[in-house]
Amino acid sequence: MRVDVPHEWPADEAEARALQDRLRPLADHLGPGPSDPRYVAGLDVAYAGNGRGTGDLVAAAVVVIDMATLAVAEQSTAVARTTFPYVPGLFAFRELPVLVEALRALRITPDLLLCDGHGLAHPRRFGLACHLGVLTGLPTAGVAKTPFTGRHDPAALPQARGSHTPLTDGTETVGRALRTQPGVKPVYLSTGHLIDLPTTTTHVLTLTPAYRLPETTRHSDHLSRQTLAAAQATAPEPA
Image (cartoon, rainbow, N blue to C red; front, side, top):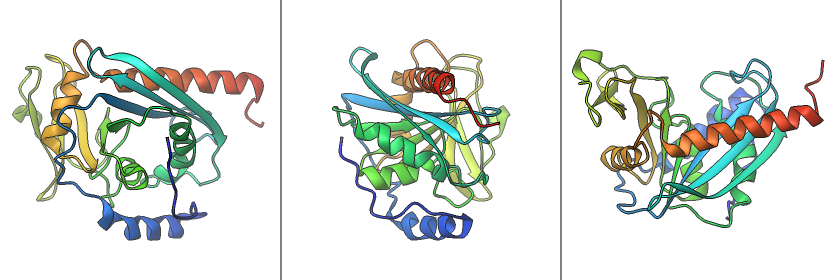
């Protein structure tokens, strides 16, 4: 898969924020997105260290799911040492370079990218899903395990599968809390590029026939951790 990066990766926080400001207007949150995608890819990154983003050794995984069967159609990985500092709200710049390398290794070009992260539901309204979408030109959305920016009323979210309620930041709707299985914690959806929330919801529900997390997330999370463990075995973190 071809992915062109038309900018240099920023070296510090000021450059990263300036780049987000420059690219933010390019993200299209109106969609509608693909109505019947054949291939949907999940993207995830595992970090060394405490596993919460502070380590410099990172492993990216992209797993392409065939929507007709929910089987894995292709997968790819990449490992790198990130040079961008740990700054909450700018995690995309620790993850994007290695994710781009993993995407470039794919033979299949997915119809939709679902990343373990956020898009519009970001303090600067330009999370990882937005940046990935703008770079690849593909419909992209975030499916996160926990919210980052925005709140929802738990009482407004019924226990039934498929129930959802807006994720709001002040008066702005930035995403959606979605119940993918009866009685389980919701996942948090936000648009990244070229797809809207209703279409994202439809595809995430298709990808969650039995578990809380989509098959895209489950497979990419497992593969990124597996890849990181293998990388650490051959190149341990510096003392």
